[in-house]
Length: 108
Image (cartoon, rainbow, N blue to C red; front, side, top):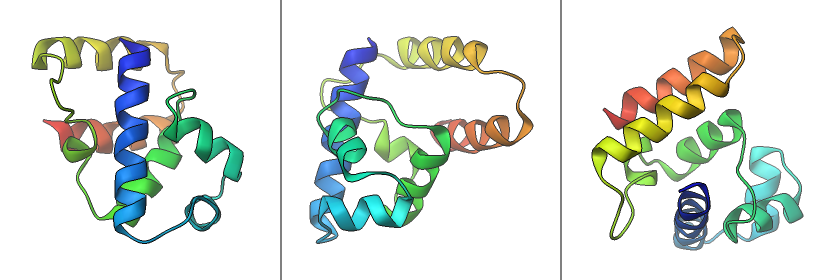
């Protein structure tokens, strides 16, 4: 499931970036990551941090739910199970947990 989500999320980011008329270089600079990192994310070869995801959502002016709704998407139950598993992997870092909470809150 990870690779499916990575690929679909990367496609969404590329789509929204192009709709905003931004190059990879411009978006990467705005969110504070290297251009090659953004390229890897858009190709579905890498996940991003919660902080980067939050910045991207703000720049594009979309909801977390819009970012995680994909064509032929996985079931709601599978999506929530996946999110819960990923949350279990996070360390108890209050800042990261707040960001994750904000993203998940937007999905519900």
